[in-house]
Image 1 (tube, rainbow, N blue to C red):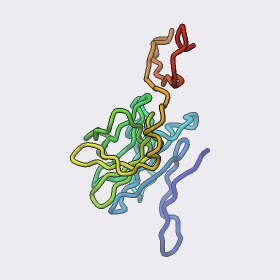
Image 2 (cartoon, rainbow, N blue to C red; image 1 turned 60 degrees about the vertical axis):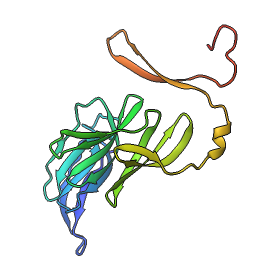
Image 3 (cartoon, rainbow, N blue to C red; image 1 turned 45 degrees about the horizontal axis):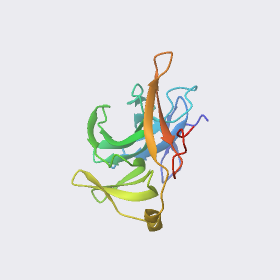
Image 4 (cartoon, helix red, strand yellow; image 1 turned 90 degrees about the vertical axis):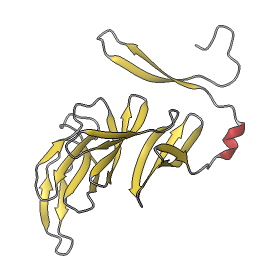
Length: 196
């Protein structure tokens, strides 16, 4: 569970820096100039996931937790020029969010409302990502002119299949916390009296 980031000199194999991550360690990415490391981690030893965006100088053990208090889980990251592109899961929805290195949300890219983004990658000045929906398993998309465009269709035969409907719901628990979930109802004719 507890892992640290070690920066090595590629020629000598010498460890030049160690970043003591307080909890779990997720994915990490070096900036294009190699000066900074964006990484996902847990806020402390008790955090059960590595979903907080953190940033460190590649030559210093110091780091900052950029999204510690945000009600979300960061699933994946990549550098977008001098900013950080993050796949943010917020409840049962997802967003492609660009963060500045100061932790400010610079921009949110629009994706189709029915898809859930799972991973993203920046290359050749283009953002590509994988996403799934109630209507299809994971496919590849790209951002074009500020909108998402589906590039693959691996399961075309699903267009002829009646799939179960899915909807988001939320309610307020007795302690005041809002609980959000995903309701999947069976496909086919609704029985008399409705679904259980």
